Image (cartoon, one colour):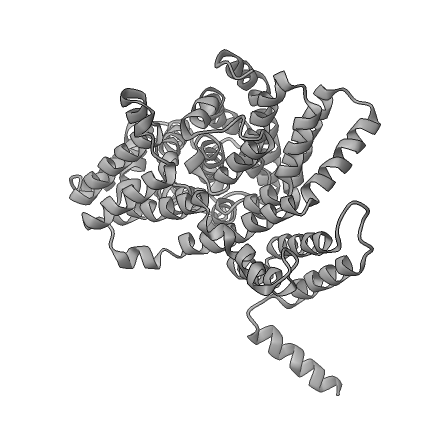
Length: 501
């Protein structure tokens, strides 16, 4: 009997498409949650929905299966359990409701558009151009990588694709050209430093544009929701608010990293020759690259509402419409083809897992769970007797540093941000609500600096072996604190100048 059980266990471990122990842990968690008494103030179905949501978050953190599978499973359970409705027909409509959300399609289509960066080689060319100009010193190479991130950020909503798929290969090529290789124990020559610049430039630029990372549109939705649409972050408003503090963070970051993780090689005159050699091998700018540049120019102008500024509000276009226009241009010009669209797994994966998390967050709000949690949090802060300034600071810090427990920025934002925003809006005087909201918005990407699993870019860069775990966490914590301080001082003053409070 024991041998049979062992054989069965071995079979499951080798055959089933999920990690057995994490799967058992999440299942037990779900059962325990469902068996607990329903708290006062919540309906039984609302409590069951919360249990499903938290179990999904836990499964994502423990990586039971790919995030898309876990999201689909959550939608299936929501539909079967009918926790949002009284019939399976209505429940499946609720479960699939967010797949029609324009914000989600903005991210999906923008990921498809960004595929052209890799296919045409424009992303690599941009990186090499900056290295060819700034590459005389390792510090200059760091600034070249940072500027490359900044240029690409408005058009690459997958920060993983941008930092891990476009910039990181360029960074590794440069480090390898100078003999900095973790396989030979020479990673500290420049690879450690450049890897950290690669990572932190990615997180800083992710916070500077709505279209720079996937969860940002969800943040926009939450901010509009807690203010009853009184404060809406358009693409232009977001970029303007984050411009000055973001640029200062980007300017100081390579210098600070040079102190925290100094490269052994300081002067790199050969980097310019290397970049120029690579550019020569690439040849002149191709037709596909020119189409990509033209398409990006059109997207930037339309996302920035330039036609509306010139010709009036009748020419305002929804950002999702603009993204579809960009995709259509690339397809009809042959820059990318339909097979490219179909094979872009990350886009369709995002549609499923992002849609499921948005759906559950919306249903939690509709069933009163967010309001219930917000009331508890507000009561706890009120009972502590702290002033609103300290309460607002505590909310931001709790939200940011709780990211140590999350392996997905989207999962973290979906699980916690709406409740924290709701509490903050209730506690902070109306005249100071906007700076609080903008600090929370900034924190939603600053927290990606903390760990080697904080966002999709992190494991790619960490996995290359250039940065030891202790160095990653130490530098991540320091950078997180520094960036929060910059936004809490310079950022708040900048928002004052802009007239937002």
